[in-house]
Image 1 (spheres, one colour):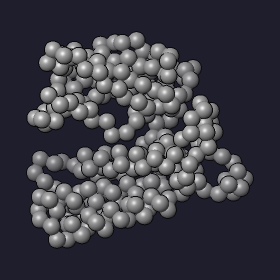
Image 2 (cartoon, helix red, strand yellow; image 1 turned 45 degrees about the vertical axis):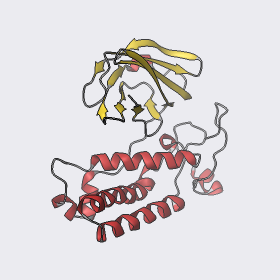
Image 3 (cartoon, helix red, strand yellow; image 1 turned 90 degrees about the vertical axis):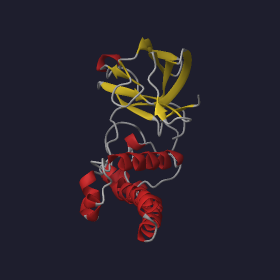
Image 4 (cartoon, helix red, strand yellow; image 1 turned 60 degrees about the vertical axis):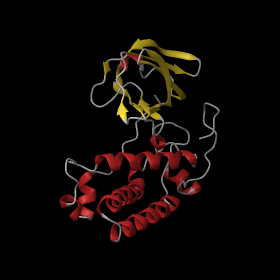
Length: 250
């Protein structure tokens, strides 16, 4: 058995808000999602324990290996924000206990993408009729492209949930989603224009991401800087960020 955890980017958990933590473990040899016979999760902020090891809320539901319903009371507004969030999951699969770790952030406001399925079909109406059987939306492609976008931002020193102008990332998200869709079409329906469209949109996504500008919550106050501060420093681009209050550069 070879197990892989479906973790595409760090977890962003909004402080003071109930949320469901999910974990999906797949046996790469069979391609099947594993349902454990038991599972627990412990949550840490650095060396400080936020949640002692607690049994998962569900096992094998909703296409996930397990989930945990994290209550707002466990992460109240009084708790500190942190970039040292760590979930330690212990899953019993086939009688063997396996440990998986998920890192992330406890943040003031969660990041919400701005791209929807209708945005794709508005730009390319033929995507509605070309949708593969059994696929009701292109949500899976949208989420995969969102993972790519967030990883690129983190590589360049920007945490998505600290970006005020989420709309500024929409075009890069749109282009990379279309790249993934047309690349899939090229594989299943034949190359030709689908492969060309995939290559075109991939180039557009990278170009857009290099050029994008947005306002960023450098001080992590949850408020947009004053116009004078914005004019003085200019719009933020994807460059290395100053060290944050927790002493780690992002």
